[in-house]
Amino acid sequence: MQIFLSSEKYHIPARILKGIIAQESQFWPISDDPYELGLGHFTANGADLVLMWNTSYYLSACIPIYGEISCSSGYSNLSADKKVMLRGWIMKQINTDSEIDLLAASLLASANQINQMVKNTTGNEPANLTSYEVMWKMTTGNYYSGSGCIGPALQKINDDALQLTWEELIAQMDGVCKTSNSYVDKVFGATE
Image (cartoon, rainbow, N blue to C red; front, side, top):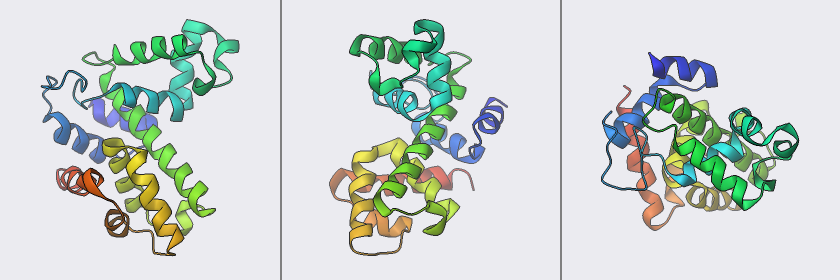
């Protein structure tokens, strides 16, 4: 029920959120990796993603701690000390009743980042270039491997005037970034 409610709150597909949890932890919150925590194997980089790309979540975390004036210029403009404190607050949501909400907020943040990356790279709206499903595959891949994998592949597609499909994006990736393909396949496969 928490997956459904959080998905509704953030307007994300519940099946993708459920698939990510199934892939990351098989719904078991204990990880062998001390840097990947909880059901979504959440990391400090994931906390940064949420705070940078999910404005409402950022403000709901920042304002009670630092006040509206300090928080109004965005996460990237906070001092290093304040960023560390907010990341810590985010990480404390892991293994609590708020964890699913955090994971959903993170998935929305990833979608926001991908949407902006497509706009910045192509100068066009994503809806004019690709499908809803491809955008969610890119979002899921971004959750897993980060913008450092998705961004260069997206740039290659744009530079070579290729069609923006998930298969074409994966074809442009190198090395460890290619593992995004099997991850996305498993997340989407877990929900069929």
